[in-house]
Image (cartoon, rainbow, N blue to C red; front, side, top):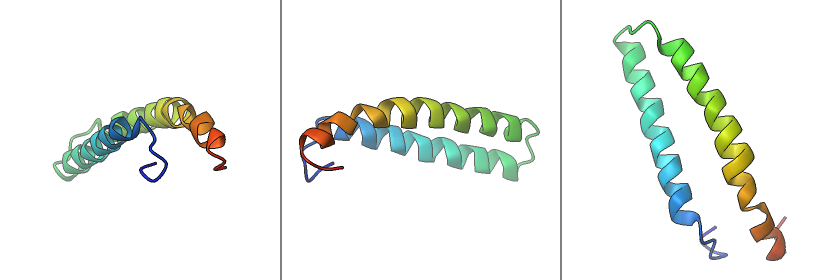
Length: 70
C-alpha cells in the first residue's frame, strides 16, 4: 500500500491497530475469567471479518487493479 501510494493507508493502519488492541483486551479479559468473553470475541471477529475484510479491504481492490497489481 505504501509503495503504491494508497490514499487510505493511514486509515488501514488505524483500523488494524484498533483490531490488535481489542484482541489484546479480549485476551486480558479471558485471563481474568470474565465469562462473556467467548461470545463477545466471536461477535467481534465476525463483525471485523464481514465489515473490514469484505468492505474496507475490498475498497482498495480497484485501486490496485488500476495500478496493474492483482
